[in-house]
Image (cartoon, rainbow, N blue to C red):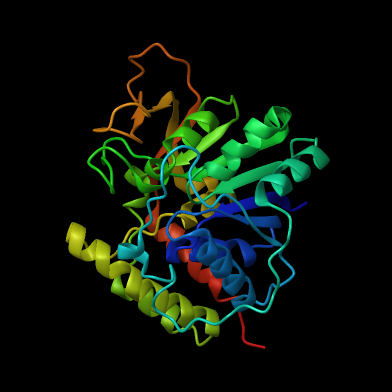
Length: 314
């Protein structure tokens, strides 16, 4: 039986690759895609999610708009990385599939209350605002979530938007604090891991050579996306962050980490949004998450290539 998931996202080129991987994987039953402000404002993230669904030939997947700003802070976006559209690189279009009228938070609450067997996994690719608001509105849903797998945070690798903080957590640290303290099983894909999955030129060329709209679109997205991080880090490519969330559901054996305690800093302006990871278990606080630090990057990209080659133009 396919695993039921909700994808919560702020596309973003790497979010788009994650969504496409999920759409290409019959092991996953995507109940809905919920959008949040993050990489770009909400008006663009919900548009981009619908563009990706249409690209994949899946306009049947419902897309919902959620929070347009963080719970407490003003919105911080990342157009300098993703471009003004969030999906700079390929030529975009105005999607024809409709945006669902229901608010993303209401959809999350309703879906989890309907699936009370704990069968739904939340795959979170952006700031945790929608998830925190759902938990505040309906605390009872926490016990019905199978687990939350999220991209966010960092420890030994530091931050990517401040010296201490990773972008997704920094955008809404108060939401992250709600989620990390909710007692829900969490699997965290931090910068420590995602910086190992780099979009090298050869890998981007592999997507371009697939001869499909999805392959070409992906190569054009990644060609734009990687320029910022290659300049920033001096690396051979850009970290492909968010697809690790979906790849973990499909190939958990290629990942390694440990259960730790993670606390979210919300008070200090210097370290706001820092994920304080007790890797060495010195705090005495109980574990609340599995923090991943190892990935077989070749197996990760081979999974992407295998699944993306299943997209054929109609």
